[in-house]
Length: 219
Image (cartoon, rainbow, N blue to C red; front, side, top):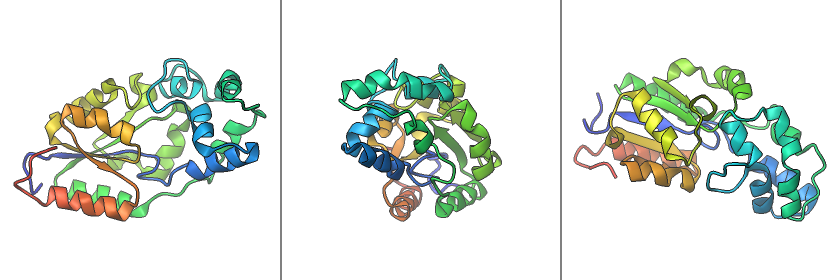
């Protein structure tokens, strides 16, 4: 059973936590245009905050098909002074561009065996679901919260509320791991304990420290 009875669930992001980040692909696309990767990231994936009309964000909310993202990116590229070539999404989403972080998946299994509820919380597309199920096995999780399915994406508050409801726990009972700090702030505001993931091993050590301290209050 959980060491701290107040902490009952652990929630994992997908990209950059359970799998390696797609930052390398963004860097490659940026290099081919001779622009800064941060600029290309904003053009292709949108601003750090949620944006109503960015095509990537719309697709993650289930409002736009993945196949239609590329055509909708032209004005975003022009605004940044970049002439897109039309293959940026294909390169970004190319098969085999990431690998599963085995240590993270192993910890999901261990946590469930120890009595914690677990969840996958991810910004993703309906078209990508079969690939995720193949790589992760959704049976590992008590809840799978996908942005396209709930019509809300991180860092919008609604998706975190949906996750807590699906886990059937209070916000203060949740520990959450994500590799983007902007996705952690709304969770922390709700009472979740948060871990910013850089090195997976360091993040797992931090998780162990949090769950192993019975007198610690959720942050």
